[in-house]
Amino acid sequence: MSTGRARLSAFLESIARHHLDDDPALITAGDFRRASGGTAAGKLLAHHRPPTALLAADSLMAVGAVSEVRRRGPRIGEDLALVAFDDIEWFAELDPPLTVVAHDARALGATAMRLLLDVINGGTAESVVLPMRLIPRRSSSARPTHTAAVRPSSV
Image (tube, rainbow, N blue to C red; front, side, top):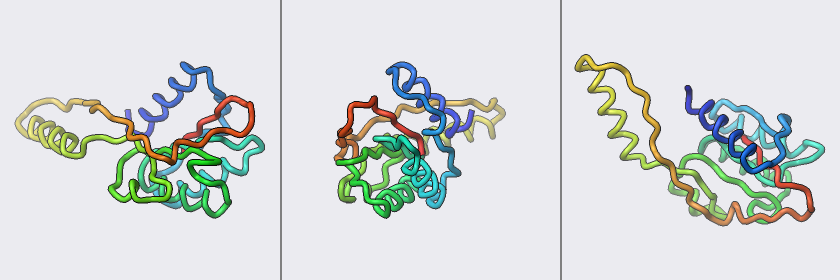
């Protein structure tokens, strides 16, 4: 399973587990590029029931989403929560600092090298899931101003 599909699957499982709005129109696929993050955020924010939170599938899409949200006016961390996969050092320096779901880059690299060497030495390809951790920052502190259920979205 690809990283994107695995993240979407985990997202949908979490939505169901927490009984949140599962409107498919509030889930938009992208291609892990900045432009698609901006396009997806724009589409979601234009929805007749815009989300109260955006979840960007990677750092580049998060950059595009941040740009589009700022262009449209909602205040990240106040009017709208925004969370991204992958931690880029300067995400902590944004205003507000961006909440992320991060992996240990060294562990990822070491594991990838070990798996590659195993295959080179005649072993079989193996799939590994590495642990992730949430790094909460101010971009996710927004509180909805209405009484509707929170509707997180995947960008």
